[in-house]
Length: 368
Ligand code: PMP
Image (cartoon, helix red, strand yellow):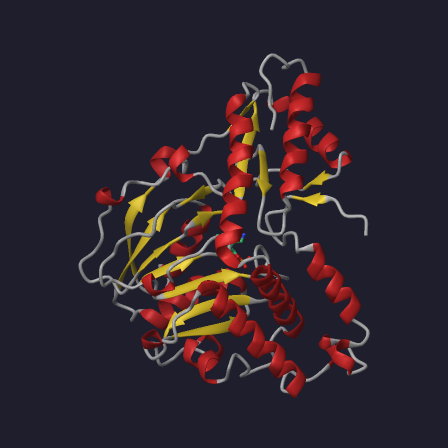
């Protein structure tokens, strides 16, 4: 295989070992003479895949028994609506923490379904920091508090779990799930689109505490109802079988690597060396407060933005792809999810140093 180092924000890199396995499995999976895409989701073979994937993700995240694991569709964006529709009545107040583009979208959707109180707002700092928890203005009777532990676009990540007492905590973990261990019992609902740390797009992982399965509004469509997924093992209609199978292989791969504690160590190291290289240089900079820099999405700008296009062309030629920052913020973004090897980060740091020097900025050095 000829593979580049892929820093895409999502759909993102999938581990080489998983891709090799998929390639081998495609024509004749499990001795069936068919690929996994060509068999019934209700067949014994596929039910085995589904159950193992669920068990493996339960093991990885140490998900307690009083939580259901749902394999849904519609991406994290559909969860922006499903969360209020399942957890809050129309007149209820819900708390949201506004820390960037994705929490903003979640808020806009929730406003269609209940009363939203913005408990904290990071927009005055241009979404480069997280307002200290003691400044949050939470409502007394919030049906839940929603936050976005990792804002994928600006590269801002909570390094703590909000302490909200008895208020159910809802987290959009699309771009940080499986990057480190978490204590699931602190959350009411966790959701994540698969296309970053889980597998192919088309699958959405939802982890729901069982007492939130029965609160949905009466009038919503069945496929928007958490209980329908929980009661049918996420098979009330045809699930995205291929994405589910690949997600299962990713879970297996992460377990073999030593689970999330091992991943956390690698992820912390990868991001720390990249931030250190940026901070050491006068040519690259990252505006995010040091206490909330993302392990997964490392953003940086060049001092001379007229060199952006050249940086992108030359990095691509060097086998480092998808480094362009999101169109809303510009600059660069290196998404270094679980499947992006440490060697990719080392190669990026070397490239950045060389680029800096060859463009007349060699006085400070970016190195490993
Ligand atoms: N939330 C976050 C934190 C994201 O990064 C994304 C996608 N980049 C979304 C939500 C939207 O996800 P989807 O495209 O799966 O709806």
